[in-house]
Length: 290
Image (cartoon, rainbow, N blue to C red; front, side):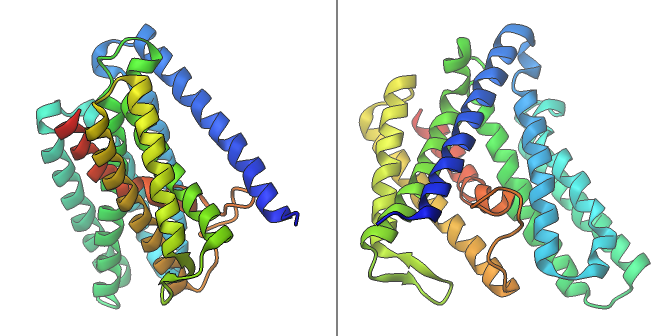
């Protein structure tokens, strides 16, 4: 039986995948050919920061607290600063710089809270700042860090090997979970958070994510097959947990999608929930196993 919604999701998904791949190849080519080593990947970093700001705005909307939007600018500045740290802080101090940015976000938000809003709902607002910083700023920081693992590579393939592999694992796991769950999903995974997620879907997603990881590891010569298998499994599981986390946030906000930006997919946060959750784990897995 023809499923019009599934067909539309596949259509728009393929368009987005093609655009993303073209963007990654173009950015890597320009970095490898036109930019000195310290600035390679800065295009990716700027784009990631802008996407992070959009996702942060969607997260603010999900909070449904108009007063807090008065200090929301702190989160946008913090997002751009945190995402681009690797380009203005020496590599060996990048983690320290990230900690400094996170501390400043919380302190400035607390100051704005006191000056503009007073003590009302301070725990709720500053708790949100802490969560958003961990969830989005750290996630995008490590996404950019994965991109920079390939800055010494030759050509676009060498430049983009790690980040393409990481994104392929996570998004293929998403696609596999969605398709498998629709086809044969019967046993609910966490029905209290996301009634449509099933154990069958989770298994199908992990299998497709592993296959994508093995293929990319072979194409880009990143690591041996055993290490690629372990990496793909760990990254795939983390990405699925990230998807579950965003489902919990949307359920609490009583909304279906974080926004209405991308046809059939919702908002930017709906698209990057898995990658940002998996980014810190993927970075450390690649550093240890590549």
